[in-house]
Length: 308
Image (cartoon, rainbow, N blue to C red):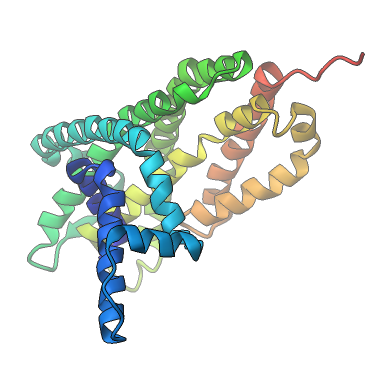
């Protein structure tokens, strides 16, 4: 089972079962396991109150976790409601994506140009449509999921400075996340992918003819689109770090040489081809985004306290 499948199962379980029942269920399971072990050692069976006293006396970490779950039950119920809203939006997005799956698949196929895409296993084409639908639904649901997270954590901010920072995140950073991600995806789709795919299609072309399977092609294209889109969030991350006082614009500017090296490493990791041209196509925009983040940190970062 993949990690994504496990997360999906946990997500559905929390929504259907409810977090308020999780600590009681954990206690019941632990009590059953404890009594099973006692039966094997000819020890008397314990009831829940006796078991709780023993667990508390032993300072069991699991018992502390269960108590924490009981204490946080109200907050977890609120989280459950937020997750339910996100789940409904995901289902609606998946239905819409399934209707337009052929069009989405054709859009993703465009950067391949004249390269033939084939499938060699019976379920491969079905899985190609499934991956496109799920990926599109996740991306379409992401804004709502992020907004629900902001609503969930908003009561925790009580001080005026914290509320002002939260309002900045809600009204400026939240839309910026979407804009920067869309900019990264557009940059990859229209500029980076055509160059990279052409390089792969012509490499070794005098020996063999390029024919890519649809599953491998989609895995490659979707990974590049998502990772470069995420990398374009650099200015926002830098700004938020400065806003919460973790770094300063001056420190970031003095470290531009380090940033130049780090962005080069990131570009080398996410660039699909090893040639310097493709790496530069990603590297220079990433470094430019870092400098944009420094500028935003200068504008929106915390002001140093005036000397008394």
